Image 1 (cartoon, helix red, strand yellow):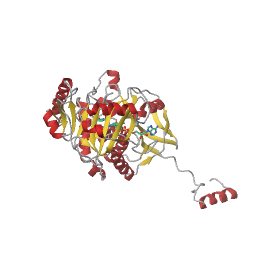
Image 2 (image 1 turned 180 degrees about the vertical axis):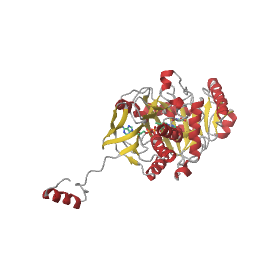
Image 3 (image 1 turned 120 degrees about the vertical axis):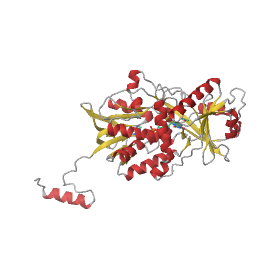
Image 4 (image 1 turned 30 degrees about the vertical axis):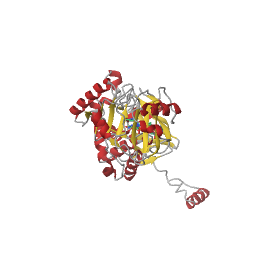
Length: 414
Ligand code: FAD
Ligand code: PYC
């Protein structure tokens, strides 16, 4: 047995009295988490939630360098749809869209899912062909979409000008069960549910290093100290390259800023979401009455998490022909997020070259809509080592050339 001098005992008694704990007790063995998730955005939180809910893995920590939902999850324009072209995409995006339908009940947290309908305008002959093809693919995939006429577009969106001189509206791809949800609430709802399951969500905790030995992950170094884990999920969107570098491998993603803005609030005037991909703009109206407007991504790689004047001008100029009423609106605020783009505009949900490190990224400009489906699939991959929903999104596709081309369905110019 260890012996203590009288001074040591007195010192420890004083520490105890001052509330610093029983310093003479043998130290608790260092906690090892079954899984650590880096990134408390929607995808990281949803992954942790389904690890607990679907696979009983609750000894989990979620590490966030800022605040939960403070990345792209809290900066997006909240469009939810599943009208993608390829089968693998339709499967995961439709899984996500259907989970959004019951998310408020599942999490007992109102995420304000509003299936108000999403339309993607066809303003060139090329887009008509593309969207008709997507509608047919969606019919085979069991995703409900249709190609609608310009007259139907006008009846759904009375403020639209379908006779624009440069880009008249020639029809639209319409998904009536697409819509929007409150992005912060999605993050908060998942976070509360994770916390209720006993998971640790550690904010202001930046991961600065990743430890592995003999090809197996051991843990991470953070701004709050070192943390051990059996399995590690990297879910950091625009910072994917930085984290992959810490683990010693490279990822086929580029980081660029994507921006959006809102107008001053006005009376309700548009109760569907409209995307105009030829002119690079999209718009919906928030519950507060603001017109939520976004455009294309920056044409160069960067980490600047903010908006820029030329984007506001380009985006608004592009939309004014189709929505003349916005020319009189004042802008209230604008912002940017750093999105992670892959070459085929499809995500990566995959094992990595390091054992028990998994990665979820590449959602680029369109990952908000995918949060629940991605979390569901990623949790299965982490818990069981495979998931039918992630199979085609693995890193192998870049070696094998099996790309999942969604450059049109991504819906935002890049
Ligand atoms: P994030 O929410 O960015 O979370 C990643 C987290 O990782 C961040 O909180 C970050 O702080 C943290 N992190 C990074 N590095 C570290 C580190 N070293 N240690 C600890 N934590 C770290 N998608 C749609 O479906 N519909 C839309 O309408 C839409 N509009 C968009 C509009 C804009 C302006 C933007 C920017 C994006 C838009 N998106 C949209 C895309 C969508 O927002 C993203 O694909 C999605 O939010 C990604 O979620 P995430 O959880 O992967 O990333
Ligand atoms: O993926 O639908 C989308 C989207 C719209 C705006 C940004 N992303």
